[in-house]
Length: 373
Image (cartoon, rainbow, N blue to C red):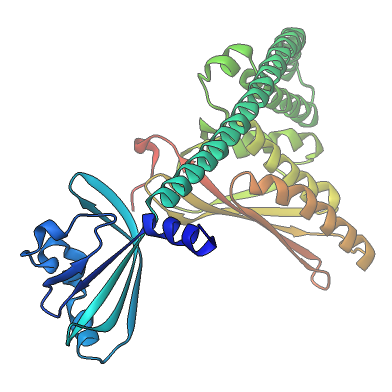
């Protein structure tokens, strides 16, 4: 055998040639792959639905309008066997009539092998991803263990701090209350009231940090029901020691419609208002401050409030104004963002005034404490 013989023998096993007319009638077949000759009287269009779908194109071959057509990777069953072949169609002249030459190139083994290679590749990718996920899980488990250890350290530390600080704080509260009763002047009385208010804010923070509440979340830090006006008054009492008259150093104006209670992180909101008032009374050297609290928007579960503080200030240089404004922005803006709000400041040096505003978004308290429209 020569090379052409070997090539012919190899190709013979993979290729079948079928000739049929425009009506789908079988004229001749080598039956290398599928035995269609035994169905000589059957119509090929009925035996192979794929031929039926391109019947119009095949008719144009027979009429001589087109020369060839290729259908790659056609999957079809025949007598309990499954084949994947490339179909090649071309027009020929056979036994004094126009006919169609159909060449089936069997690629079933090649496509099956490609499928196995792709499947193995997918399995390799999945195994690599699973390994990556397992490593990430191990890393997360280590982080969780570390976090639990840190939480335990925090609980122990909070328990120690709470136990060591609460006792002297309670004694300070009792002493301040006792000394109020024997105060010799209004100034002394205000000093003791300021002391009580400052200690009560610290006590709120300790209460929130108790180990039992940290573990069981009996009182979520940001869901403590708080009387808003009462909180403002308690914070203002801290500054009573600088009073010379009976009035508070900051005049409060609560506009109608304000909710009575809100759900907030009470110590953090108290800290925000404390810093707010402290800058007004000390930073600007103000002689008079007026705070107005108004409702901007009311929703079923939250409200938007505006707190505007207007100060009459002492004359300051441009450098002092810029430095103080920048410091306030850095301090108060960050605190305001914890309540989904913002802080703004406007300085009117010619009028010796400064206007500071806090816009806060607060959750509403119990329904009975929400004002009606």
